[in-house]
Amino acid sequence: MDYYELHPVTPQQRYINKAVEKLKKGGVIIYPTDTVYGIGCDIFNKSAIEKIYRIKNVTETKLFSFIIPNLKEIAKYAKVSDYAYKLMKKLLPGPYTFVLPASKLVPKILWTKRKTVGIRIPNHPVALTLTEELGHPIISTSVTNRKGEILYDPSEIHMVFNNQIDLMLANGAINGQPSTIVDLTNDEPHVIREGAGDVSMLY
Image (spheres, rainbow, N blue to C red):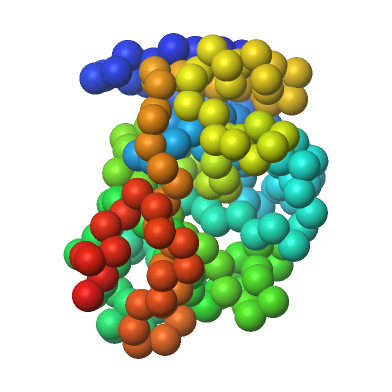
């Protein structure tokens, strides 16, 4: 694993560029978000997605969400009602994953049986810059150990994943919670998982 420690205030662009190059070559990376560390790859690289399933020790019935850089991009990857757009505009960027009907552009490996997808716009410059510069969304799934416990400390993550991941951008310990998952397939929010995002903001 290539391992780079980012400056906490001004992340080094050269390290982010190295991560983008890995993603373009089908690599799998670990990167910081506004909640916890994430494991990611280009959503259009099926073999990289399958590698993440193996790393996470889960089957393809476990669906991954993905990160896009801004609200303008949402319409490419999901069908968005006026209600859903207004709510997301109020809350994003932020620690929420929104479940929406998938567009045909999204690879079917990322669809649920209901033909929906989970979309994130985290409030973190590194995560957003990665997907902006790649030009594609990237997978967003929490870094966990084999027991499913979230790992927060970069040195522990490095030790556990050293032989499985191509590159890690370390940004100090991120002692957060996973994102709050909200189903917006209907014109009222349904909270699937309460996490870092304040659910009172949904109403």
